[in-house]
Length: 459
Image (tube, rainbow, N blue to C red; front, top):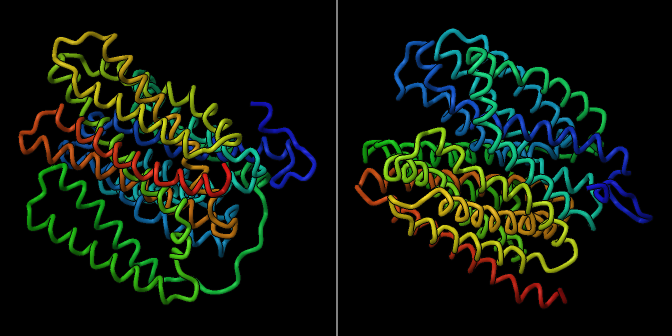
């Protein structure tokens, strides 16, 4: 870890001491956004009882946060060029923390949903540009290691969220889950304002038409995916998907003509970027699908309690936390494509092994399979992220970061929606896990297509 903060002659990025404070600001902001989702999920029954609403309505406390966040990722990535990434990141953390206070003080579902939507906007501002800020902070020689640290933080946040939520709910009411963000957000704002790199804003206008089309495109898609997993009527599902598709076509047309496009399509001409993005999206379909399917497998077929199920999930993020930083360091020294492909192979084998579990399988049989999946994902993500961020010009790293965050969120949502659709159709849970292995195989094929490109560069 100490090598991340060493400074060598000729290094770009920030000097070592300044690097530490900047990284701490990024870690705090990322953890707040990542922990929030899994932590709040634990509290949904308590919120429903307190506000006297049904379970079908209270799930929008989570859903609206996710839709709001996902729909604005591309918008904020582009907006950072006008405001600077430092200003946008500080504003995002501040909005998230203040909206969390509003959530804590809410006495009705309507006001809670309003503040949750605002929290989603704050999270989108930070998550959309986080990876590109790592590129600003660290020298190129340490970019893989830095992104390995980021993967460890995200995995740790997902793993810790349910435990933090359960611990707080054992001693306090649900509003304290949101109030917790206020002091953390204050510290993150001060650190980010002081330590994140200053940069000049790009002159010129902003693609407001592209922004509106992006929100319509992504918002419609995520509402449709949520509806697919929760029994939305077919006509409504088709309407949402159709509106999303029309918005997508208009968005692409706009991006070809705009003077300052929201998402410069030229970055997709770099095949390493395009293939890495496709590999990431396919891999996150598999992960999102597996996380939901396994909850049903463990509880409904294997008879584990919700608490036991939570513990059975632990090896996956724990393996990412352990392997991610190492994978990042290796990606700085060797071909990251080979590492990412190896990771996807292990993830695919792990998902196939989970799909072969039967109702009589023991805890040990579950744990090693979950650990294998986490090992594979930990080996895949940092090297792949290094390719995503490092393969485009530095001036376009914010756009690449927004596309990366969007691809990840789209993949996860599609995976969750597919589980809901399969289960509603009476398909066995094991079959959905085989589908996860298949989408991971597709990700592996995208990754392997990069091998000749790496060989051409002499890696």
